[in-house]
Image (cartoon, rainbow, N blue to C red; front, top):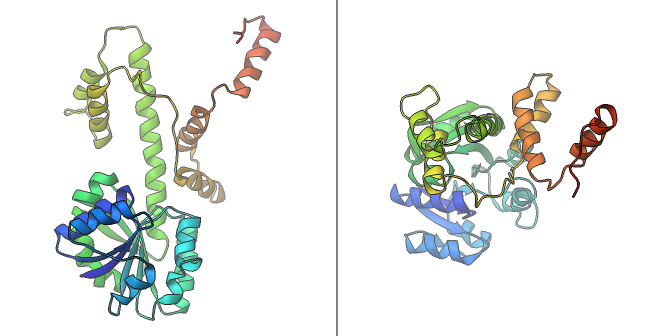
Length: 302
């Protein structure tokens, strides 16, 4: 297949390498030149603008967009770059980023007005998966999915792609996937903290993670990554406890509230991330002084 590709970040660049390995022809554009030069060196055709990309693709065109969710993707599709207005009926846009599913539903409707097909793909597996075989959760029209299925099959691990349903559903399932990931990570973090600070001070984190990842019921890809991390730095002394997020868990919590779904574990994991970014929590200060007031408990002063 010959297709256009926009966005060569950690995921996008590796996905293009994956496509080239499977003999797809890729016409690539990226805002910064260095990643573009890398994929060109591996066999992609590099272009200097979106317009040049479109002119190098024959209809019906397929263009895969792999950009940051929100304003950046919106600007590419309908703003400064106006990709949608430059395409023709029958062309296909794939959004493989972590867009909000509500945005994807709206974008699909706007594309449909022009006869352009919009496919939303939740992409999991990280940069390694993008490079060697990803997990793809695909929303849109089933007939377009059937048309593109050979592409999805070539980019995925075995049985690692699936048509989920109507527009937005691919990104919806990926959103919830990422929220579940938050819960797994938080549970692991709390478990290893108890191991570290519990009664047995000589326990080795790498040893614990290795045995947990060898036949136990919590053996997993994430535990394997913990094993790798602890093999590199068993105490994590060089790591600051600041946890970032990309928005998907917040969207999941908001959706759970909208549909009145209990979402306590995953909401807790999200709020812990927010707490990790505070050098000194004002809420914790309030609790400390209140404990002093009612119970005479000592407070620590700066």
